[in-house]
Amino acid sequence: RRDLRTFDHAALFHALKAHDQVYCAFVFDSTILDSLPRSDRRIAFILCAVEEVAEDLRRMGGALIILQGDPCDEIPQLAARLGVQAVYANRDYEPMALQRDAAVEANIRRLASAEFCLFKDQVIFECDEVLTQQGKPFSVFTPYKNAWLKRLTSYYLQAYPVERYAANLAIPDAVPPAPTLSELGFVPTD
Image 1: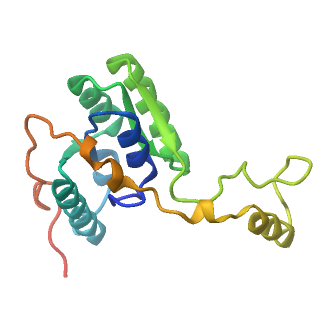
Image 2 (image 1 turned 30 degrees about the horizontal axis):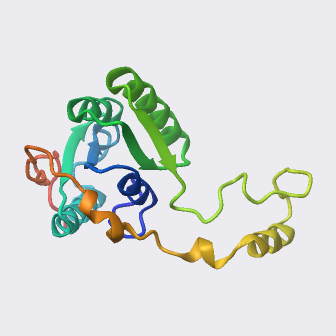
């Protein structure tokens, strides 16, 4: 997702705080990757970021489970295999992501009988948090900006203290290595 980091990560923080064992996973989404040109530079960048997250988690005492496929299938199947109580993720706002998350949630409930918990992470305020006095979205920028700034406090600017709960990171029985670019079906670029 848009949150390839171990620091100041809302979903990771809430999962670590709520549970004694937390597994971390990333899915290379085949529904997206299959339509891309084989020399797409973004994939090499994402792979490097995923490897960096995996290394950060190792240093913190955990591991990163890296999967490839349709997240609507991969995440619920992983949740069922691990026997988790809940799956945590940061909210995504794109229309396709909303559809994906709805399918993931339905499959998690069906296959793993687990909760699907989404958290605000990439924004300071979500669309329904700063509204007019009538409870409607603003249509003029300046009043919106003023309301937004009035609502902003130091609370919203603090990082989630992920490291405080890092002892709850879990390592599954087997953690395969990260795939190579060629294993993902892509070629190196300049």
